[in-house]
Image (cartoon, rainbow, N blue to C red):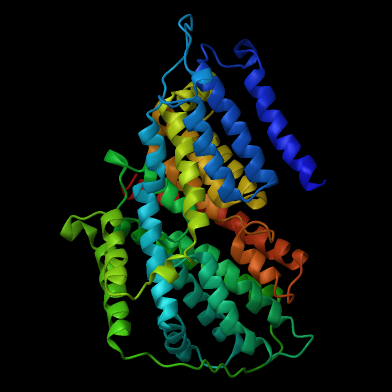
Length: 471
């Protein structure tokens, strides 16, 4: 299928949905605004799955379409006519545009500043050098060390940036293996799998986590340290399983390998500023219950410090992952539209979920999340599903014994991040596949097993959290 045909399909289908009579849509009392949002939702779904344009560009289009079609300052053609009986609620244009500066975006921005400063002043490579020393020279333990370091870094840095750094470190290590040594496959797969799993440990570790935080407010609020209290142990257990699986499937032939990472900690004032700011930000995130600031406010500390001291320059700002921020902003805007218009709640009410056992509903939601995230961006998947999940959690009393809103949001967020069976599932997978040292079948076999075990483990985690009174 050519790019032009993909683009044509993605444009024509939402237009047809928009032109359909409201009576055909199987939702009672559908307002005009809700009808338009269904068309925008279909537009987002198609563009994020088929990708005729970059995914971040789709997010920008979502925001623009909402401004033009459903905001209180919409285009004249889309404003309510006097005879409109059921037009629905228009959303403030300021609220829609405010998604570009959502607290979630600021949380990501703070994480990006930490990652950029760590790379610029070689904090990441030096930490890897120091942390890898205790693991010796036996391949199985070197692999464990590489995976643990990758997982820890990915809790606070972009998974993509972490994978790029660790694959660079891995390059010289791979030359120590013989050509036919299957251990190379284990080492290359270990990096993206560890990055994907490690991101589960913190709210900023992976975009679906941060998107989930957007909906975990009020009585359902989850603090940074609280998230780590269950996220880190869960990630470490799953990481150990992935390590054992890779060693079982691709056992190294070499008895020993000599890993030598060059580098030393810098000692100028800028480097020390990076070390101190990184540590202080992390501590503030962990102990938010002591100082009263939430994770969004804490995320602004490195932004302020690094820009004021010149550690992050105007030139550095140009290399930030703005595409990720825009992608998340588009998802927030879509969720905002679905929530503010009442469409998400309307959809939930039109499906007879009350006839399903509560546990079945949760399983269906998590399976849908992991399947969608396997074939499309996990961020886009979380953006699409979270508004529906929040409406589901609020409207179904049967979910309350299992943990209600908090449970289903956490379960879906974790499930989105566990999709790692294909090169297209996550950027770390794609980067590892691009090295040429692994094939798609190897990634599919091991990634599918880890995803399946991870999905079952998510449900076990929810049971444990409910048992200890967290949910």
